[in-house]
Length: 340
Image (cartoon, rainbow, N blue to C red; front, side, top):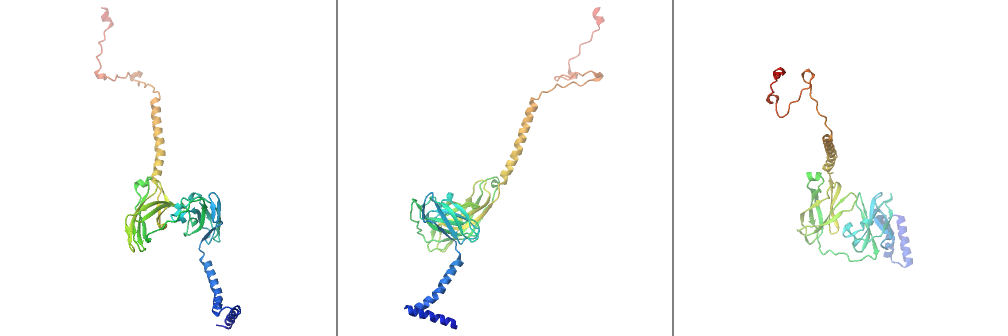
């Protein structure tokens, strides 16, 4: 220790003695400055996203100002009022009254959010989450005046499921090319890291497109995942008829999203080809039918007989007999013979 450090240490001990503190307390006070500085520096380095509200409670139809810091600059965020501390995912949130905001270059934001009654009872939170890029979320406790309050659901089991591997199996068919609902099968390898087995776990399967929230449906699986064991789980996934574009398949258990699998659905070009053929064939058929009607209603002119030898028009033969089989001609009489 150099001479300056010795002098500082002696000054601290002398001040402690004058104030009636023990040497041990003085030593603690000396090192407390360094510890406090290190703690503050560590909080600034962490930069975890946070969110706050200007009031802890508001009535339905009112507004609340939501502020946040520590977010990724230029990130698109969604703001929602959710019930049951958002244990059930976005299904517990008032999605129709949600708002979006883009963070400033310093990672902060400020946005007014209308207060709406979530579909689930309180305790409620204001949930903020990123839409694209690296996922990040933060919640702020909030209460909706007059909204029912119920205790949070308690999980009795000690199972803890995680996904080791996931993939989408299957492919399109000719019917899908013509607009039939696309179908796939989500195959996941689930491991139980908890101390108790998971009997007939109730999964939730969600599908979404773009920035829209997933549409969840319950998919219970019949079976048991032993403690420390793993099982292969297969769940059928089906989209709406004519769906195409980039979709996302999510698997949730116990309010936690276990896996998200992208699904690129090709456009149903057969439907486009059908409409093109329809636009060509129908006008052509109408044109042909119109021409047939015009040809039937058009007046016809009688055909003239072609001139025979000597410029005299030849009499057309009757259709019911041929010239060779016609009736014999009457014998020609001389006028002189009749006068005798």
